[in-house]
Amino acid sequence: MTSGILAILLTQSPTPAHAAPRPWKNAEGTKSVLGEFIRRDASQITIDLEKGGEVSIPLDKLHPDDRAWLDTNHPTAGAAPTDKAPVFDQLKFGDDRAQVLEKLKASKFVEMTTDETFLGRSGLNGVFRTRQKIGGLHAMLYFDWSGDNRLKEINLQTDGLPSGELKTQLVPCWKELIGLLTTLHGKPIVADNNLHLSSLQDGSMAPTHLWKLEETGSALLGAARDGEKYQIVVRFTKEEVKPVALP
Image (tube, rainbow, N blue to C red; front, side):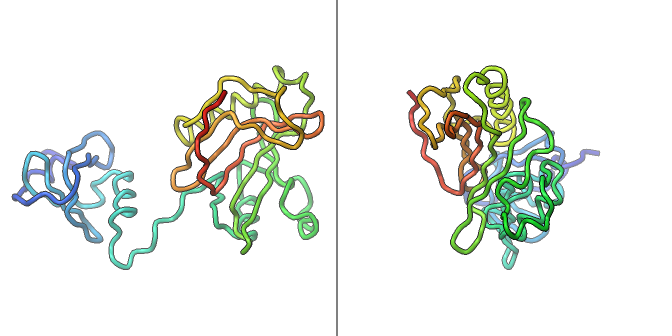
């Protein structure tokens, strides 16, 4: 007996077109059909097949990506808004300070480097660092907040190192972060093959890579200068950073 989406397609009736056709995958992602979305309810969707014929498909027969697309573009009446995707680990733009702290304490990716009793005086900046080294270096976490104390920016930055450590420590960390961020956010929309330090002004950051985040915001990777020392920095910001041609 035929299973999955193919079995559902055996019952069809004609219907007019309603929207642009898109592929709909079965739950396992192994098969797909091309059809136009017509309507949905809490348990199924109805599409018009490109080859003709209307078909209703139970939501549990659809791939999670297609269900997520439905929840974003055609939510059911009264449905709760789709939850925002995490920006870094489980942190999301809009989290308040208490939420950020609880998520960081529960994280398997970062660890606290001081006693929690000191947080009231020091705040969260520089308190957490990555548990594992990235390209041989740990990265500390720093945060920026909106006027109503909601998270709007996350920065990961390594300890400062002299320019003589460019090839031995800074570049390996930078290259590993390129791979990690590409795995998480896809191909960068801006990418420079070289990490430049000589033109960096004190107190500034020079990004080499830019990614557009899934829902909103941007991720930038590059180097920063603090006096005579240099750091690798990743900046996750709620802002939509526009790509700029690199020299």
